[in-house]
Length: 138
Picture (cartoon, rainbow, N blue to C red):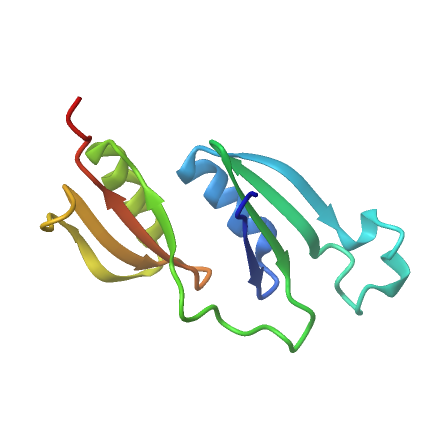
């Protein structure tokens, strides 16, 4: 079984995935626009270049996304996308990149369970938790 997050965006899926590819070090695998599918004629007005389906490979995980139908977008709430990042410098870099034009909820800081932990909502409205735990003793 694989667990994949699928995030709905308010018309900015392609931009978000380009940012995530750059700041998370992933690889965009799929960017399927309405106009590129057999459903092109069914695209809502002005939606031919919006994303019907996109995937981003992040190590052994996948992030999926799409643009919500016009007037149907609801901001994500009640969850965070949790990134476990073992390197503190990389955790700081990614946190700063996600915070750019976004908002920090919990500043990146040392906690009793982690070298660094913080929560940020990015410019696209997606909430991320960055967790940098100490490596387990061998």
